[in-house]
Length: 356
Image (cartoon, rainbow, N blue to C red; front, side):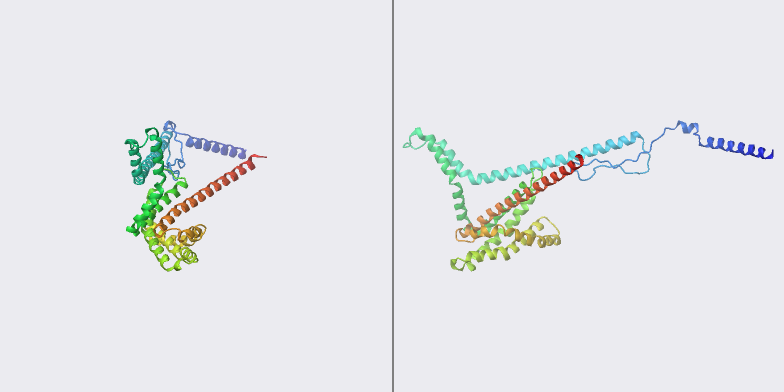
């Protein structure tokens, strides 16, 4: 009997404890009136700028703050607006660069074209403007004018070379420096074009630095170097003189010239001299080995008596442009081949996954 009473008391105590615990866990009227706020942990917004390199606006991850839906949406809209503004700024900047590059290139092209063609163009216009001599029959006047115009234009390259050859002896260092400056500028521009750059991405400042390096370092130095070889390595026109000059040029002189060009390029770009020196050390030997595939054959003509002394540097600079064009085309073709090969590999991987 006593045992039964103890069991009833224990049961009553357990029931009372359960009721008290339920009352403590139940929400109060104030708690039931409060709106529930869902805790959000925003992830890093995958909104990138136009360049696609870094997030332009991102929300902090797991800040420990509770966000309701409205605040979360406001922050996401602000992130999207900032990303759109960043993209618009990049597009406007690229368009401005394209307009400036187009204006510069047009100005240079018009100036060069005028200097090369204005005499002949004025002569051709005079042919059509004024009447022919009386001894010339009028029935073949048009044919005469057209034939004379074609003859003037056909003689333009030869006349330009003869004019250059007559001009260089008056100030050889300056005019050869100008020749190398133009060649190096054009060579760098051609290289960028073959790399796939457009008006928005072409770096005319880099081309200008390359031209300045050619003007300062290549033209004047090559003038004195060629005079030295013609004086001391020609051996009075002996047949082996050309070979000796090619050997000297493609060893000692090429190492010095490549190092000088790399140093000037780095200096004009305002780089750290220590970094420039590392570049010189890293590129000297590869550049020399690369040049042996092309320049010994070219210099068999350059240092022979086929090319007059005052035209040797012009010939070398024209071949510089050809060499840069070949290198750029080969490099671009190799890049496209690697991309195509990578695409084929990816397709094969996809087929392996898809096919049973």
